[in-house]
Length: 422
Image (cartoon, rainbow, N blue to C red; front, top):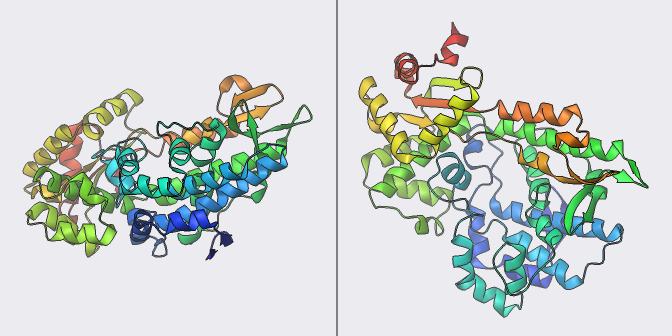
């Protein structure tokens, strides 16, 4: 099958990949947007998990080709399996998955929980077994399997700098209408070292500044998109509203995690809007109409020291009970319905991609290892990334002023947004 992709051009899929792409579990991904609620800020950001999965498959083949050019012997059968695993890497995603899993911690991450194992025990596993690739693909995706695969092959699908990252950076930037990109020269830097996929920063015994520049370019783009798109406050509030609606629906028994694997973005919002639970329905209707709550209280690392941030994350991010109690207390003090107060406390931010294994003149190291002569750009990017952490209380527009005062007293930290307005 030949597909025309706006990011990678013509993508030719093998008969095996085509058979997997046509499975119902893959077609479901057409209805799940890659960037969740970012379309409310960037109207072009309507690309889907399906589009992204095809792109990851294409990038995985480019990485394999790069490894072959460096002298790596890779059987065709293994490359076929890597392509299929790349297609399936997001098969367990639910609508607004990162929002529900990472930001409000309602479910285990799609790549950490039991969903993939359950799928492999059901129709997906049966389909892959008929194609003769169930065990090898399962192993590539990190499942216990009777067929082992090299670690570097797993890294192509799920590593620090992998096919997933290199597709979504380019795809998200394009559909958000941004002009940022990385250079294709990065593909010349991949190598295998100690059974790991690494970025080769040395050649003929000497370190390569050009390769170092390429990896910095990728990490800069990762930061840029996080700052401009992934953490944009409008995207955040819309996602937080949907998450709270799902949480309320779960608590009332009108929605279960297993239901989400049969829903897409629009059918989930429609189901919430008609679920019969007033608070969940109200939040869903507001999101559908872009009648979003506003920032009533905002603080960042400027006001919240590291230890206090850790405490707040443990209390308001990891604990649904404590978060709901705080929302209920704020709602009572503000005289608002429970649905009109949404507290958002993300996990502490860290640039995990900076931990990519690299091959230098000294051997195998990690890019962000301070003991390996790390250059200043990496440390600066990691610091800037950590500084993106924000703690929010979202309320209706008419309650913004009061929310700033009450939340400042409740959390014993002045609202930074109020200070900026003054």
